[in-house]
Image (cartoon, rainbow, N blue to C red):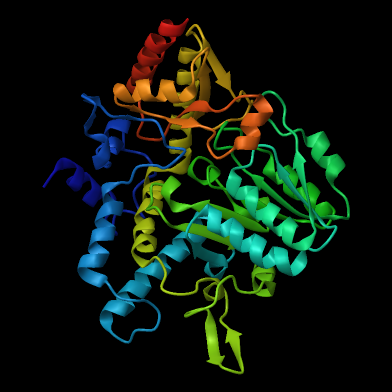
Length: 429
C-alpha cells in the first residue's frame, strides 16, 4: 500500500474523524500526501497547481469513496427495499447532515443538492423569482458577480419586467456601500451578491448587505462558491435567505452543489423540475409535491458524488477551517510581497480583505501568453475573464492571470512561480 493510502486511511477512518484534534499533527507535507494528483510532472517539471479558485484537487479518501460506492453500494436511493439501497440512502443522507453542520443550517431539510452553484442560483431565480418578483420590482447584484449570478437575474427580468441594478466598486475592487444604500427602497425585492470574488479574492461585507436589504423587506442570496472553502460561513449568523456553493471547490467531486434556503421560503417556492422523487402522488388529474428538500431534487440524484463529498467535509473537520485559512493567508501575503517586486507586475484587485487569490498582469503581455509560458514550467494558473466579463470591463482589461492558493500549496511553489514570472517579465520589460 502506498504511503498516501496509509495516511488517507488513518486520517479519514470513521473512528478517528470525530476525535482527532483539528490540524494538530498535520504539516503541509503530510497534507500533500493525501492528494495523489500533486505528485506528478507536467512538461518535465514538478506540478505546481495554482488554479484552486477554479477547482480544488481531491484527497485520496474522496476518490476511494467514489470507487467504493460503485464497487459495493451501487443502488438508487430512498425507495429500494434491499440492503444496497438502504446503505446508499444512509450514506447519501449522512452527507446532507454533514452539510447542515458545515454551514450551521437549522435542519438538514433545508439543504438541497444541485449540480453546482450555477444551478442553485438558477433554481432560486426560476422558482422564488417567478413566483414573488414582478414588473417594476428591483433586483440588486454587484459589479464583481460571476456570470452565473448575472445571467439568471437578467433572464428573470426579461420574463417578468423586473429591473436589475448593479452596485459599483472601487478601483481596489471593493463594493461601494454608500451606493448600495442609495439603491435600496421598497421596490427592492431581491439582492444576490457574491461573498468572495472569484476574480479578485475580495471578501464582501455580506452581513452588512443582508441586514440593510432586510431592512427594506428584500430577500438575499449569497453566492458562497469561493467563500465556503476559505471562510467560516454560518447561515444563521449571516441570516441570509439563500446560500449557494459547489462541492468541487471544497475538495469534493465535480457536478455537485448545494442550495440552502430558509424553510418558509423553500416551502412557498414551486418545484424547479418535475419527475420522480419530487412528488407525493401523481394522477392525470393533478400532482401533489413532496416535502423539502425532495421537492427540489427531481430524478435520480448524483448519488456517488454526494456520498464522496462527505469525505471532503471530514477533511475540513480534521485539518480545521481556521488552520486552512491561516495557511492560505500566509501564502497570499508571501506571494503578493514577492511578485510585487517584479518590474512590470500589475496586481488586479487590492482589497483590504481578501482570500488567497492573486490576479495580475504583466505589462505589455496578454494574460493567455503568460499562462502558456507558466504551463511550460509545470505551473497551472487560470487566465482570461474568469466568467466576470463586466468586472473586467470595469477595469478596462480583457482578463488577468490568476494564481489561487490552497492548503496543500507551499512557499517553495510560490518561489517557483516568482522565478517564472520574473523570467517572463524580463522578456517584455
